Structure formats: structure tokens, C-alpha cells
Length: 283
Image 1 (cartoon, rainbow, N blue to C red):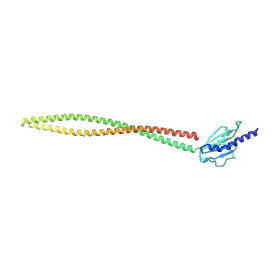
Image 2: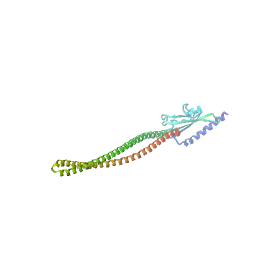
Image 3: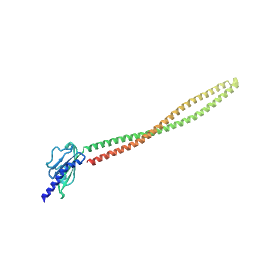
Image 4: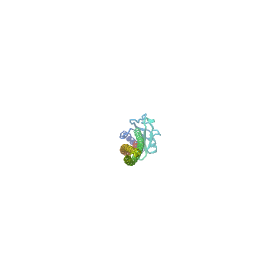
């Protein structure tokens, strides 16, 4: 009976040894496969980059490696092997091999290189970091755009106030124009009366002339002020148009910034998902 069990165990282990090369080809990653009975290695298939320094076939298995632990515990064992050991970091996973009676007769070990995972994680971290920095820049830009919009609104209000003051000034000019016209009429009437008075109205004639001169100067000044006010109005209208154009650009920038911010958030999430997926798929 013992001999039959031993033969059965040998058949199982021999089958696994023959199956090992095919198993390695099924794994689309650089990996190493080792198979051992309860005492020694029966086969060791190196990967492209993961290679043991010596041929371990026929050598006793070390008690510290996962395959030995899996044989002892009867449970799967996993271990991260640092780059310093074989020149490349990899994850070693081992499971016990059982016979038909459930007795542990050996173990299978699989080492998968972590180089691709490290590249993925590094790239994911780089993308995530860049996304965070870009998001912070976009957020700052959005805040600047909001401040710009506030300043544009204040400028527009100031422009409206200036327009109101100009209209008030125009009303004052109308009053002055009326006073100048009245003064001119008074001066004209005074000149007529002074001429009628003859010698006695000579002094009054001088006063009348001064009144008419003051009225004429006032009329001239009014025209000059009106010219200046018209130029100011033209400038303010131009400012209003520029503020309106800038405001439209600001709104478009705000909308574009919001869309870009959302895109960067999605990119950061994708980078995080990529990092998690690399841990799950590659180990």
C-alpha cells in the first residue's frame, strides 16, 4: 500500500514537472516556475529576466522560501523578493500539492516579475501628481478669472456712474447756457437803453458791454466743455465695449476651465485606478 501511494505521488509530481513549461507559456508575464517534493526541487524553469544564480534541481529546498512554507503549512504562501536578491524584484507565490488522500506531497512555486508593475505604478503616480498640480493651477486660474470678472463688473459700474455724472454735467451746462443767453439779452437791451440815454448812459454802456462779453465767453466755454464731454463719452463707450468683450472672454474661459478641471479629476481617478489594477493584476 505504501508503495502504491509513493508511486501515485511520483506520478503526480512527474506530471506537474512535465506541465510546468506549458504553464509558464500561459502566463503573459516574465516569471519563474519551481516544483519540489517535500525535500528537494524537481524542476526550476527560469524566466527572461528572473533567473536563479545556480541550477536548483535536485537541491534541498530552503525552509525560508515560500514553497517550503506552503508544504509545511498546507496553505498558499506569498512573499515579495527584493531586487537585491536576483537583480529584479518579483513576487513569489507557492501552493501545496496534495495526493488523492489530501496529504501534502510537494509544492509549486511561481515568481512573477514586478518590473512592469513598478513602471505602471511609477507612471500612475507621475500622472496623479501631475494631475494634482495641474488641478491646483487650474483652480488658481479659475479664482483669478473670478476676480477678473468681479473687477470687470466694478469697472462697468464705475463707467455707468461716470455716464450719470456726465449727464448731470450736461444739465448744469444747459443751465449755464440759459444764463449766458439771458445775460447776452440783458447786455443787448442795456446797450440799447444806454444809447438812448446818450451822455448819461455812457457808464451803463460799459457795464452792458462787459455783460455781453461775459455771456459770449460763457457760450464759448460751454462749447469747449461740451466738446470735452463728447470725447469722454466716446471713450467711455469704447471702454464699455471692451469690458463687454473681455467679460464674454472671461465667461468662456471660466467654462473651459471648469471642463478642464473635471477632465483632470477624471485623469487623476484613472491614474489611481491604474495603480490599483496593477497591484491586483500583476501582484
